[in-house]
Amino acid sequence: MQQTDVIIIGASASGLMCAIEAGKRGRKVTVLDHSNKVGKKILMSGGGRCNFTNYSVSAENYISHNPHFCKSALSRYTQWDFMELVKSHGIKFHEKSHGQLFCDHSAKDIVSMLLAECDRSGVSVHVNTSIDAVNKGPGQQFMVSSSMGNIQCEALVVATGGLSVPTLGASAFGYKLAEQFDIKVWPTSAALVPFTLQPEDKSKFSVLSGVAVDSIVSDATKSFRENILFTHRGLSGPAILQLSSYWRPGRTIQIDLLPDVDLFYELKSTKNRQPNTHLKTALLKYLPKRLVSLFLGQEFAESVLHGLNESEIKHIASLFKQWMIKPNGTEGYRTAEVTLGGVDCDALSSKTMECNNVSGLYFIGEVVDVTGWLGGYNFQWAWSSAWCAGQYV
Image (cartoon, rainbow, N blue to C red; front, side, top):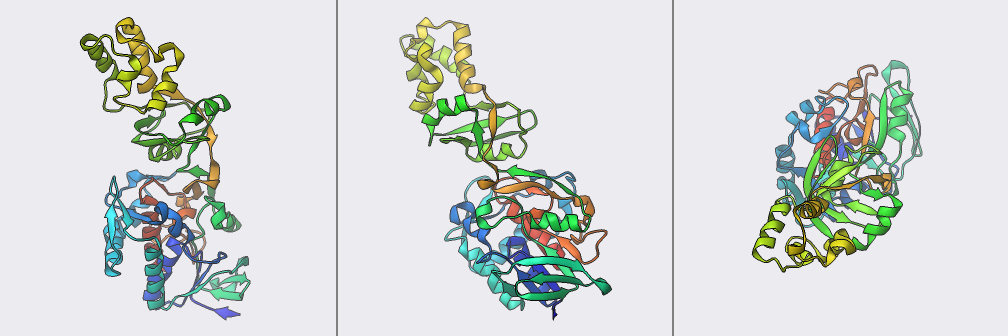
């Protein structure tokens, strides 16, 4: 039986961060991961440049059945703290938009930084290591049966992430482990994920694949403004991904394709000034040609403005300002950036991330029922929750 102080399951963003902090305290830390390399999700995030945090972080940027739970961790290890760590390793970064911070060079810089800090803290990291069983034995010790043998520890940290992007090795391991110890797990679903469309709509709008438009996307509960992107299967882009975390099957969404334009007023004004202008021509001032042609259809495509009455202009404006569409669903975990739901926050200490009823067992990062918006918020939750646990394991 091998002995260590802390076992962390998952060489993820949160797993490595927790290992670093525990190692700094002189704890003997062993990180186990079934993948062939560490930080796979870090490496693929942000188009390979890792959107590692955001200038503006608050509890409002997170979804949870306990919306207050994340406040403690986010306030004790902030985005500024992580930025200082990044700067100390000489990693250059930039703001892309909406406070989102990306590496100038590569996401590999973040992984290299974390591994360097692990080395400095004496952390032992093992990849290609499967776990067969976890049990709590006498004397409050955990026993982990793995492909590298049986290991005993005082503290066990679960940093296994959610179900998103299964090709990177995502699994339900963390949720099953929670249930093994009678810890509630909220139902999970794909979040920050593209919408698929109903067959008829998919057939109609797939010709717009590749077209991006600055829009306001809303449903009954939430509204986001950023680009939407038409795809072969449906709708994607930042605004769609953001709304997907709140959307529920069966709901219709509304899209304003011209957030800064009073289209009814603009078309009426153009009609008064230049009555012989074709409707399509007037709209091309604001929107891509393919989109205008498809949305107008044969009925209005070649209309001349002087031939349109006020109610017809109102109808045309509503086509672009109040486009209503009911998604068929989402693309699911295959392309989802994160997983909604997970280990119940009420079962954990917001100060330490330790289970209230199972001493020595901790859950951090995405496996917990805290889901961030697009824009670096999920990484910040990983850093913050991991840092907190690292002070106590």
